[in-house]
Image 1 (cartoon, rainbow, N blue to C red):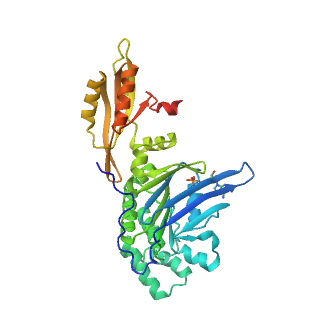
Image 2: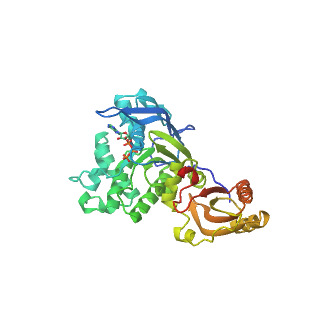
Image 3: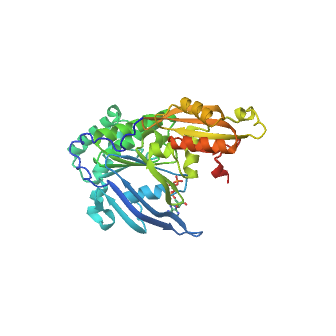
Length: 377
Ligand SMILES: Nc1ncnc2c1ncn2[C@@H]1O[C@H](COP(=O)(O)OP(=O)(O)OP(=O)(O)O)[C@@H](O)[C@H]1O
């Protein structure tokens, strides 16, 4: 199974768009720090965050509530100013700009919000036109750009409707059209699907992906759901307490998570692997034997069935498959399996080392808590 490059081939740019970011990153954040001081204890919302997002990439930032995601994404268009650090967007240092120059650069960065932020007294078309009015775009051009943006999100027939007449998914499409109307190069999505049901979430994620391809956009999104990351992101950063604790290609982070927090996120998304009832029914180890539960992740060309039967022969072990599933991340298949290994500790250690040599990721798990041993410690 081959591993493909993270960033997609750049498709043709949107007519009239500002040209791409050049060879460097589209977004380059360096050592961002932001401290909030209130009446209580001070909060380090950002505690030294550095990130680079390549042109054309969909980059996800995932983390629990309070991890610092919103503060971080708002630093990209300077809705929030970091206390220190550097914010380079499309090759330019934004912190060095103000007034007209900053407003002009911000137009290259569209933003989509969780709760859509539509003006209820304005029609769909007038909501989409709003940022163009603020930017002083002449009326005729506004009308053309609004029509173009609504067509891109599949809402050309709703131009005269009011937000109250739309479903949640349609409202978010309007939010996306409004973000696209100024023809940005970068799209920031702040929990864009968190207020939507699962089916609508899929539709909106598919739309964002198509727009990235069609318009050669760079997308930075924040979410608390690893499922969103799994669905559309090329790379992901996991945040905790104002820091990035893990970062990489989505496939790598899912198949070889290093941090316990990342493992918990992944377990929430792709499920736990050892049904407790099954564990209760497993035979007890024989005299002199140990029973160890192992979670095995495979993402390579090895057929697990062959690997398991060979390990059983080589190391004189009994290996029971308790559960298994094949899933797909960013278009690449991977497998996840739970095994009960019966044998001497040395035999099980030797088999585990052999699996690891073959490129499988083996993690001992505790039943019935289903935590990895490292997390339980
Ligand atoms: N304006 C503010 N004043 C004081 N504290 C703030 C402010 N904005 C954010 N914080 C604090 O900074 C930390 C990070 O908040 P942030 O909103 O960036 O996290 P988040 O990961 O986006 O969480 P959520 O998904 O709940 O918004 C939190 O502890 C939050 O309470």
